[in-house]
Length: 126
Image (cartoon, rainbow, N blue to C red):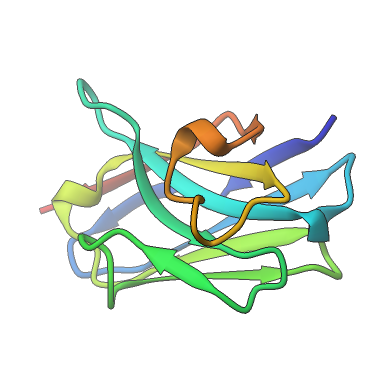
């Protein structure tokens, strides 16, 4: 059983930056592709970014390309999401998720993920 715990959310003005972190425990971290998803009030959960098991490949939603960067440290069992140039439409609860033996070809689909965190709230004011 893998546990993932997000941190780093908060309130920021438009144009600002936040760095989300996700700490994983209880499994062999390097065997999991990792992803970030978000869910705004009244909307479905959507893909934001994902990173392969080795960290060598990444993928992003079109809405965040060029602004967000996902990274991982397999020695520390952590994943980070650096969010720059934030917009009010980025306001949502952000979730970290782990996909056992996931590949870059499939990790945009939330249904592929095995373990989820409780989420961290990001609010971007205009």
